[in-house]
View 1: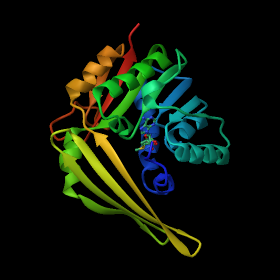
View 2: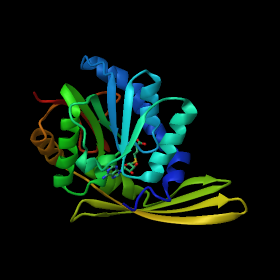
View 3: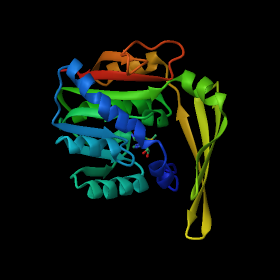
Length: 251
Ligand SMILES: C[S@@+](CC[C@H](N)C(=O)[O-])C[C@H]1O[C@@H](n2cnc3c(N)ncnc32)[C@H](O)[C@@H]1O
């Protein structure tokens, strides 16, 4: 894996963790709607741990997996600071090793877009399904093809962070033949008196709703909701930037 390595401290310092904290705020309403009250949660692609930490603070037993060691290291340090016990494990989304352990599995902030084929998406969904107890919920989001091909291209070059000790620039492009978007990140981080440069290239894929639904079905999950707006809980429309799925393990 060559993403979320030197970029990890930029991610943790940036506005990015706010998204999963927002999901933590909205989660109770979603769980109420589907009459779920999980006591165990697996957060797939947990990143720097903010969501798992928010869950642990509510007394839920949380586990986080991610492929990036630097992200997991930050997550462990944050959990220690917040004085919560969380298992953070280095695992690939596509080959999760858990069996019937969790009431709820989550995957937030477009992490599944890092999987570039439907085979890989199916691998991740199958792992989530195996990890769930009977009737458990798997809730996830994905960036849409519209987001990657239109919304991202409205600002193909942007400064994402400009602070006294950090500068982060994103350049984005989209390939219509593959539905892959490329995000080139260049960062400068001030360490004592010198600036260190980092470069990472992230490739993410846009899936159609049909492709996502077929993987949900084949992974032994039932779709119970699909929204283009998490606030209104309404169906996706042609210019939805994101989709949220709520699925339940089929028994
Ligand atoms: C945009 S970040 C989201 C992190 C976190 N879910 C959040 O909401 O802040 C994407 C995360 O996906 C992880 N990731 C990407 N591909 C992965 C894979 N194949 N297996 C596990 N984690 C992966 C990255 O390491 C990164 O932490």
